[in-house]
Picture 1 (cartoon, rainbow, N blue to C red):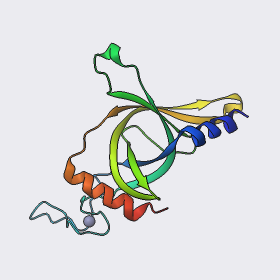
Picture 2: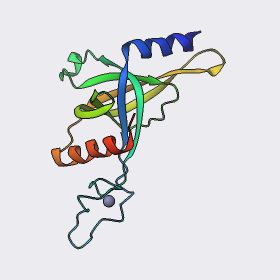
Picture 3: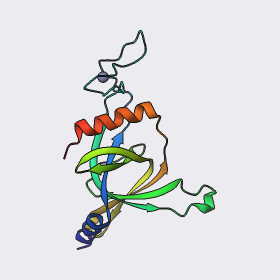
Picture 4: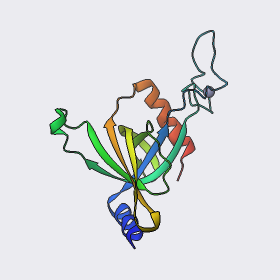
Length: 154
Ligand SMILES: [Zn+2]
């Protein structure tokens, strides 16, 4: 019952976001040690030099009243479905979709903490994450967008 309600709320008020797990330790084979750079046209890492782990989930955004921290607009809460596999350090990427095509990246949030909201019988209902706004350098962002387009088609 509660699970169904949580799913309905996500369906109604949520939208598709991409979760990127930064896996910089998984260096791509295209990395050229001599130049210390990846192949910019690589079809495996999309020029990142490491293999991105991407997944797409319906999520709901809640701005956080963080004025008491003296930094308005920094912290926020994202609700994700219970089966979303997210960990601290993952990056939620807010994407502008156009007919299922990732047109642009509009925002990025780093997951600082995540909680499983559970109910009776220990049933997981949804995942609540507390995030802080993140800046990704433009070069990497172009590559991440290319990876999303290639790896997460609708
Ligand atoms: Zn590569």
